[in-house]
Structure formats: C-alpha cells, structure tokens
Length: 128
Image 1 (tube, rainbow, N blue to C red):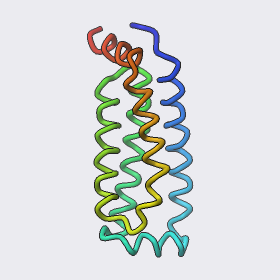
Image 2 (image 1 turned 180 degrees about the horizontal axis):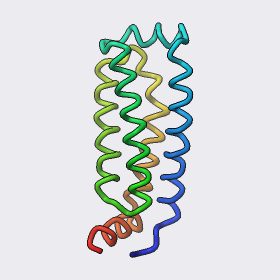
Image 3 (image 1 turned 180 degrees about the vertical axis):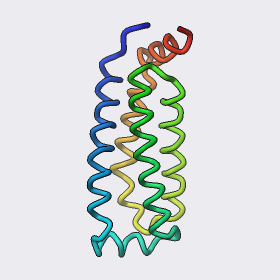
Image 4 (image 1 turned 30 degrees about the horizontal axis):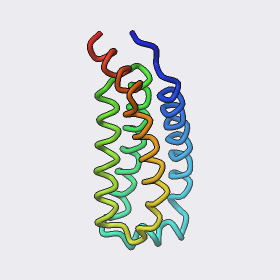
C-alpha cells in the first residue's frame, strides 16, 4: 500500500474531531430557544433536521476513518453527502449566510482530498 499523504491524515483527523465536537454541541443545543427559533423557520421540520444532522455526522465519521484506510468510496460518499446537504440547505434554509463558513471549509477539504498525491493514494489502495 502506498504511503498516506500527510494532508489526508490531517484532513481526516480534523473531520473526526469536528464531528465529535458537533455531536456534543448539536445535542446540547436541542433545548436552546434561539436554535429552535431558527430551525422552526425552515421548510424542514426540526426533527428531520436533527436526523439529517446526526446522519451527516455519522457519515463524516465513517468516511473519515475509511479514508484513513485509503477507501475511495468514502471520499466520494463524503463529497456527495455534503453537496446534497448544501443543495437542501440552499433551498430550505432561512439564513443562507450561515452556510458560508461551511462551504469554505468543505471546499478546502475537497481541495486536499483531490490533490494528485491524494488521487494516487486512493487509486493505489483501490487496486491493491
């Protein structure tokens, strides 16, 4: 197996840590009146929003661990899930400006996931 690029290691561990932090912060914000007010303005019921949030966090964790092992499907699933999430958020979110930091971070992650060395790493483990 080809050696994993350091950028993949850093990105994946950042995703793992941030997903764990968001599980905690998302769970503690369930009873926050401001969060409830913002969520109630969406076209999607808050209960569905929470299901989507936790599903996304689980997908991020699973994909990050699999990407550390060189699994290309995980890279594609991570990108696909996030693109789908941004499309849903663009069409339903009452506060679209809140999406800007997430989109910027996502684009940075995608940049590192699809650099030439990363492509070689995922391709090498795919054929091994």
